[in-house]
Image (cartoon, rainbow, N blue to C red; front, side, top):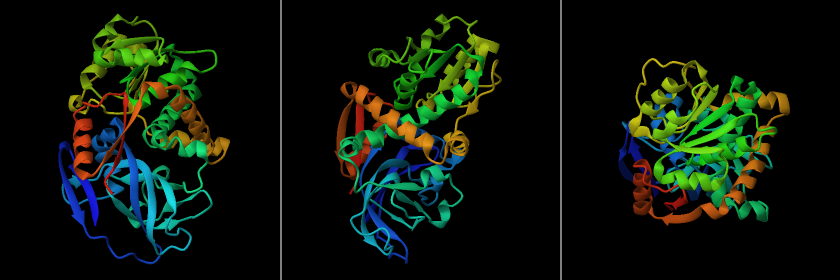
Length: 359
């Protein structure tokens, strides 16, 4: 049986657990048991932006329901694809489920692409799976971090590269909203290490998470959301928004006006506070999607080079914050569904790295 946790698109609070028979494999397909995957605020963003960006299309469900994508590891338990045999372990983009059927194509030493027909028009970044059976001991020791942190640190790396590639849009400081999120803390860490420190890094978070962000050391200054007005409005500023709160966005634009030179929308951790912010002074908000900058660097640096660099930085950051976070393993459909409800409600401490399994 395949077990899936599904949520109602547009109302992530409503969820259901669905079981169905494992379908008969067609020639070229494999059945994978999903061993473990991470659950972070980023997965909430996948759900909230599911229709806008297409995340619901990766693992489609019926009617109003959707399956939130996750990052994790899976093992082949049945195969009609000789190049990907039973026992092969892979890492990549998976459904919130116990099993998944894929059609491996472009199989090589490093991995393969899922050639399922419904995924062909979707971004290739999410369709590529890495072989993990023969991972180095170093990478095996970081499996939880690879699921919970590396995809978000890759996003943070690409954001940093985009801003630097555009000469920081003339800014002198970067506001990181939801700085306690995994993407936010990764971004602050990366920005703090840019040669010459061209921009000041200001982390903005809830009062409850302020000490956590300060303890990580990546920000020059850490503020609560209601303290943004304390900043000098004359400083040319970039905002990188992982929160997605319309009220906070409006406050930032109103405070800085034309000195807000770039608004980079990345996440929606405060998804219940979203909605239209209305006409805003300063730079027009632009939703960030990593594929564009990755494709640019693939052409300039060579295919896969930006992701190789990002993974190297991911290893470094994961090691640096190891003492600030703790891996928590959750098993079984009921416990996994409860963890998802807790994450959707915003009640998960940033100190917790949740690793789930339904199988």
